[in-house]
Length: 284
Ligand code: AMP
Image (cartoon, rainbow, N blue to C red):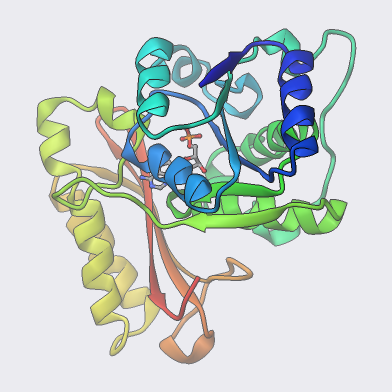
């Protein structure tokens, strides 16, 4: 696996791969890698792409400076994990390499109601920062396929919208959420959970599964309240539980309101904010 820190060096390598007729697959990450991230790489390899992973803790998408500061960083271990799944290239740029000083690369796109609900409501500026960095990384890597996780469902919808608005020549591939044996969605943030909170956190997925069953018979308001109570009952602090149209991300009231329906949760386990979601109707 080749490791690059400079845009130019990565681009020279990718140019050669393209000339050799290879397609480029790309999985952007913020590091502290786990099996969910590695699954993106496995998918890209199965698609026979020259697979590039990036590790960049993007300062512009953190609205809480403490969260940015405490974000786990372990580049050597990450590189070993990527090597173990035969990733072809790792891009680990500095902040100045991604955002050259003096150049304003902020992306000003209007994502409409997609970006004002759920994460958009509770993490102001997050999606503008996220879209800016994904757009910048796509501009650097110019992949044929972009691999992203269903775990961050709203992020995926916004990236899909961005690709559409900018008419970028890239295919977005969604990777199903990879979970721990007890159902907890894998996340770099899980490393920061106290033992008590780690033991309580699987209630998020358990509540989503119960909601999926209940929603066939009961209205959204009722199943949302039940899930909220379950999560709070286990000692977590739910920030939101939403049942939304999987395309528009707007709330639905009943099972028949949309073909694709997704339940989404954000909850604090101690001071760690966790998110998860589950398709409750249709196929994402
Ligand atoms: P992050 O490092 O958290 O920015 O995530 C990088 C990519 O990995 C994003 O596309 C995430 O959606 C994806 N990802 C994170 N956790 C998981 C998971 N448990 N299962 C599948 N994909 C994931």
